[in-house]
Structure formats: C-alpha cells, structure tokens
Length: 310
Image 1 (cartoon, rainbow, N blue to C red):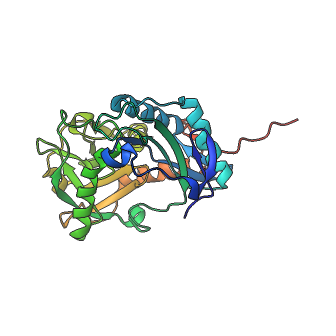
Image 2 (image 1 turned 135 degrees about the vertical axis):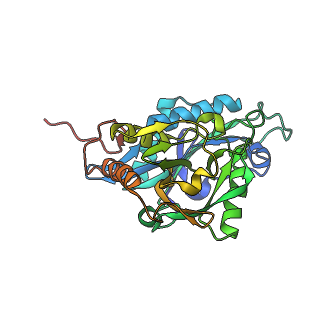
Image 3 (image 1 turned 135 degrees about the horizontal axis):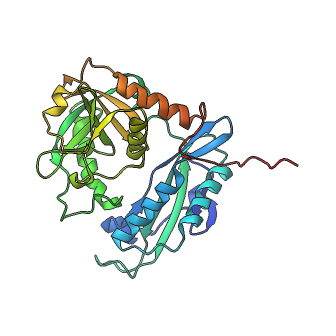
C-alpha cells in the first residue's frame, strides 16, 4: 500500500506528487540505480537492516554507471530513516532510487539532471507467504546472465533488470515461482533477483562475483552466519547438474530474505523441504532482524532512538 510521504531531492512531498516527465532519460534508457532495503519490526521499534552497506552499494553502482549523486551517503542514510519514521511504519520495504531526469533525449545522458527519491511501502513475502516455511519450485531459465564485458553485474542498474524480467516471466509462465539463470559459460549465476546457495554433503557452495551476480547484502549476511555456525563455504563455479543432486538450496535477497528451494526443474531438492542448514540460517537471521536476540554484527539501525536517561 502507498505511504503518505516520499523523500525527493532533499524534501518530503506527498506520494501522489512524486511524478516525472515522460522525457526522463531513465524512462527511455534505464539510466537509474536503485536499492532494496528492509526495515523490520523489533521490540525497540522499526529497525533498518544493514543500512550503510545498502547505501554504500548504491553509491558504488552510481559510480560504475557514471551518475553523479548530489547527496552524501550520510544524507541518504538519514533520509531513509526519516522517511520510515515520518510514514509511521513498524516494518516496510524501502526503495532509494537515483535517476537521470528530463533533458537530452540522446543515449549519452550525463548532462541531464540527476534526481534522488526514497519511498517506502508495506510489503510481505516476495515469493509468497508460504515460501519461507515450505520453499519454492524453480526452473533453470533459458535466459543467460550478461557476459562480463557487456553489462556491470555488480551495479544495481535499472536497465539491467530487463534480463531479470525475462527470467522471472518465463518461470511464471511455466508454473514456477522463480527462475535461475546460468552465466555466459553455462555455470549457475543467480535468480532473477536473488543470490543462490547450494548445499551438498554439508558443504555450502555459492557462485562468485565473476559469475555475473550482484554481490548481495543479504548474501553477505548469510555467509557471515554460515561461517559463525561452522559450515565450510566454497566460492567456485556451480555446475547446473549440482542443482539436481543438492541436499538443500536457498535464495537470499532483501525481498526474498532466506527462501528455501524445494525443487529445480521439477526435481526435488533433497527431501523436497527445507533442510537443517537452511533452517539454521533462517533461525539466526530472523532472530536478529526481529530483535528476539542480540544483534552481534551491528546490522540494525533503529528508526526511533532510545531517549537518554536524565
């Protein structure tokens, strides 16, 4: 559902006033950079999950895309927190967006004005309400991820998500919750909007950044949890056939959180239900984000800071 306020270029405006002109460069050429951030409900009020890493990646993506951001990381961090507070959310999804606005209509858009917006929505489970508990059915997509000399997969650039749309639409048309794309060499890359973890014989495999993946913030969080739980992790090419013999698999992402995968191309993963490694990561992740246990990593930023004692 829409929120009341959107932060735009340093000011708060009403949701319905946040419009752009049809000649905006980003609308024609995908010249935008964005982030997806979640704020979770905790006993201390709403808390933003890994605020600084998300904002830092936003800035790095803009640097790669040659988009000059007219605000600092600190200003954007403060604006995200204030947007959540002003809209009165207890939990929400946050979308910071940097884009080239109206100006030149040509492909080279660096002379166009740059705008920055932040909006918040209340959004549940990305892959469905039962996905976290029961897992999802996925397919290996016929669409490949971009070659490393065609696009910049480490940047979260709007135009690149046409590829993700193809992967996701194909999967939905074929009756699956999501698709998994291979890289240009035929090795496993990632989902349409999720990173991937594969567990075989208690060893965790995950594709590396050289396989056209977005280096996910939730992926990094899951890796931290897995290391602290004592699991062996291998960053190496994942062959497609490894998906068919895996004991467990799960997606990670801001939207997907920690979502188990129960089948690939209609072949059950393990016993066709979330396994012990996946459940262990989920348990730790959701305990921290819900505030049910202490946050040992400093991942949460409270929206409403506690008042100092007199």
